[in-house]
Image 1 (cartoon, one colour):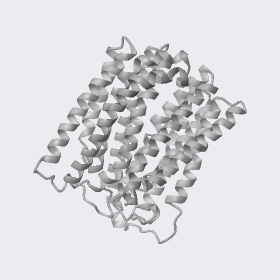
Image 2: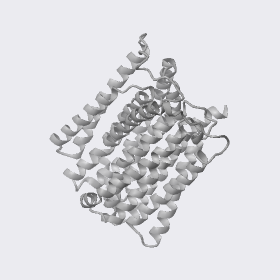
Image 3: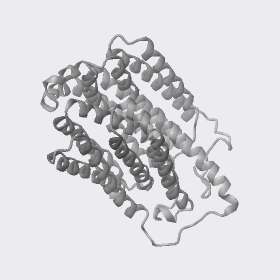
Image 4: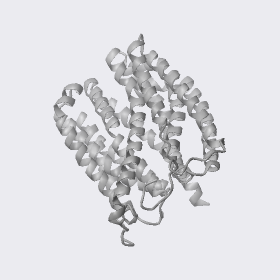
Length: 427
């Protein structure tokens, strides 16, 4: 009974965790000057985009581990060696590419090289940490995953406040973030990798080609999924900064409130991922999981209404100062935009975990439509939110109708289209 309850505690603790992250942004606004705070947000936005690599590795690892013996450590799995070495190789490769882009990014963001190098270290650490988090997630060790996240955020806050008191500004944010990620990496590595209870299992050479092919396909699916997600949650801020720089600070504050809906829903989805992966060929199980998530989203809708109408507007001057009260005008639209996006996000993960790829065409069309809309229709920042509201409404309806036909159709997928479990091939 306790083992069944533990995974569902993850969303609760993760919501609380996002409260700490929210506080980190508030604290940064207290200690940093206007220019430094703007640079910090630009760098963290770039990190959010670059974290697509780590998030893809986490989802891929969770999907593989959920199909295997969950009593084994990561390196004892048939694909354990690949799951450990690949993130490390990709981390070094990405940092080499980023070093080549250093002059360009320095010019675009208006920051110094030292700040960018700290950001690269953060990306490197996050990519490897994500592998250990995927292992915990796939085994449904959600409390261990919570602990890992808390180690990161609390370490980040402690180091940030120490450096801020010593007079550091922008460097305090970046070094604090790197320190928190390093602490999380140490914990994750000990928990997921450094366990020596049995020899690891290695696939035969004759099967390596199939393994790498499946690994590449699954990683590509995961990478594209996270790329779309991060694009949708960051593109409007970039356009607001470009077209409405004066209003961008208020919009950024409103965005942090609105994205609380996204963080809560992502926490719920993270708890669902192992069960979605395990029920990939079980339509009855999928129907039950979608039904549970639907009830949770109805509850979330009530929370969005109460928060954006009554609570958030009153909290802006208390947390950020009266200078940011202009953020109030974006709260209601922003809250419903991210509520709808949470529905889209859930179905995207369902498609990835059951091996359906056609959703990418819908996401690609949506991204193109959003860019065209932003370019043509931008009388005010609210126009961007209205465009997102329409797009996510259409995508939500599309995914719901598609799920209905898929789950209640009597037709079964052909064998070559359905992902079967094979210990030598990723699912």
